Length: 115
Image (cartoon, rainbow, N blue to C red; front, side, top):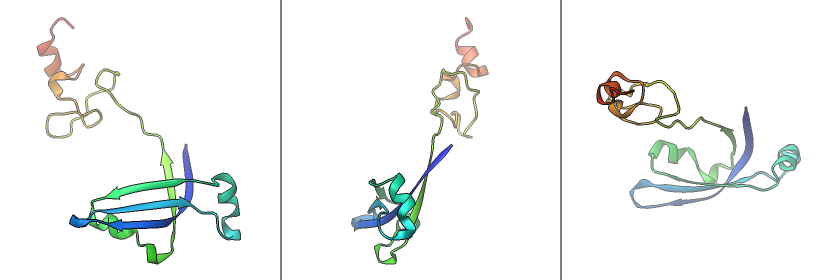
């Protein structure tokens, strides 16, 4: 399931080094936003962005609205029973635990022969 919110860029602040802070607020203006406003009458999202192309995507002078999609993502922990999926550097891409410390891997079994 996903939840969506329609927001507008209310504020932007630029900092040294290229970081930009953007503040988005729920849309409330205009008849075209009546259904959005009734479902989300108030809301604020604040982001600090250090990726230049992503920061440039937000321009307060553009006056665009933004559709924000929110989706739950499973949070993995090393002992929840998920399989090891390498990140190519010796750790699990799902939980970031090193292969030798990840239950179920051959490296783990060598260090913990008792099971």
